[in-house]
Image: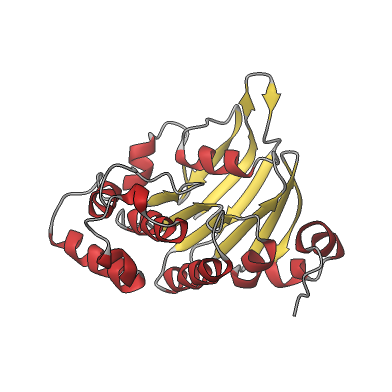
Length: 238
């Protein structure tokens, strides 16, 4: 579904991604792990078009995204869940969800998709008229995921979905991610919580200073000594 072929990116003279190759198959959950400044968020920005590769190419469903606008990428089925939620804080929850469907015709499917969001997040339905900026961090993340689902994505790109959440909300969010995947949505996820990310992913990549240094089945990477030491710390992997 999504492929990076030898992608390099730069911010001025700063070389961020360095000949990166990823491959995400339809129906998978793929996690991208790495420390700060490793290039994880730049990867997500490159998928959505806010960062353009300086060399290499990104393909979606076999076609290059090189000349495709961000709005058109969303129309084709790629939707982001942005780092730190990035809701419209002065708009209501309902208005934020509406914005997720801005590339679509407002027809009967709109109501169906709202009901899908409510089924996943009953609390979101309870707070439809509440100003989004007044929600808790966990509630805002629910709205952010719901907003992305309103675009009817085939590929959901999630940037640090557990950031700033309490342990209870973290578990809930990862349960929801698994459910969304089971409903047919492919997921590519950047995540600092390696233990949780590897517990639900099919495969994973590890970035260090802009280069892929490890990749493979998530279950195998959970047992890798480098991963256990660098990302799992003292956590016991079952």
